Image 1: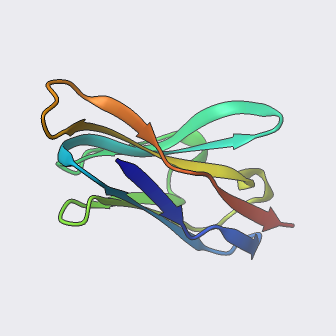
Image 2: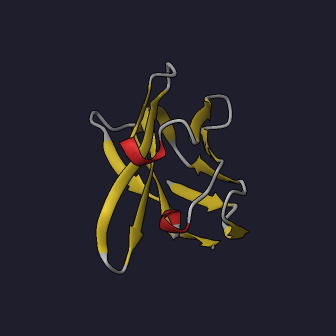
Length: 120
């Protein structure tokens, strides 16, 4: 199983950026997908999460600005980031809790990070 993230980059404060992350491989089912972020000063923090039924959750600092969505047919999670602030600068990681074909339980997988830089 691989998670391939894309969409990071440099944007000015107040701007928008979109991230996507596609899970591929021998996937039987996905429970949740999520986005985390990490800076050198902070531990990795949960930004937003979504279940395959569309239930979402956000950390308080991004509520009203970020939107997480999922395309179950493509095993892909998206993060639309609006009204970006310099403090949103971080490496963003996608995450999936999923069950592989032939496995009984669910396992957490991580994508490679993608850097988001918001200039003031």
